[in-house]
Image (cartoon, rainbow, N blue to C red; front, side):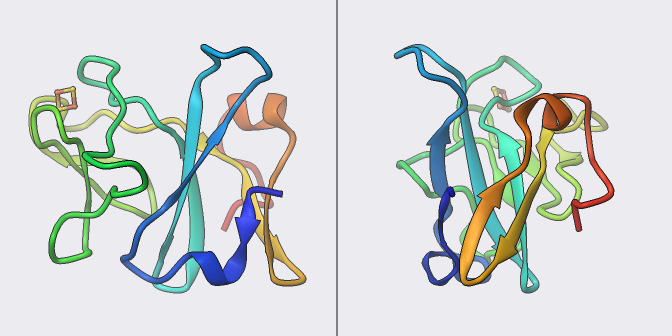
Length: 121
Ligand code: FES
C-alpha cells in the first residue's frame, strides 16, 4: 500500500514512496487528477532530478500540471507527458497504481517498469 485514498486530493499534494529497500532506491510518487490516481517515478526526464519543490508538492499553483522544481517543466498529470519546458515531448516513467478499499496500491514493480498496464487507469 502506498497510502490511504483520502490522503490524495485532486490537484493537491502527492505522496512519495520508495521503490526499493536500499537507502538510495529511486522514489516514486502518486497524485490524484480528476478523481484518478496516477503514479510515476520521481525523476525528471530532463536531468534526472526529483520533481517536487517541497516533499509531496508536485502540482503547479493552479493544480493543473505537475511541475519540475529544477527548470520548470510541466507534465500532464494523467499521462506524464511533458507539455512545456526543456524536456517537452518526453515523459515521466509511469508506475502502475490502483485504488481498492480506500487504499492506493502499487502494482508489481517489474510490470510497472515495463510501462503502463491494463490495470492503470
Ligand atoms: S531537471 Fe526538470 S526541467 Fe530540468
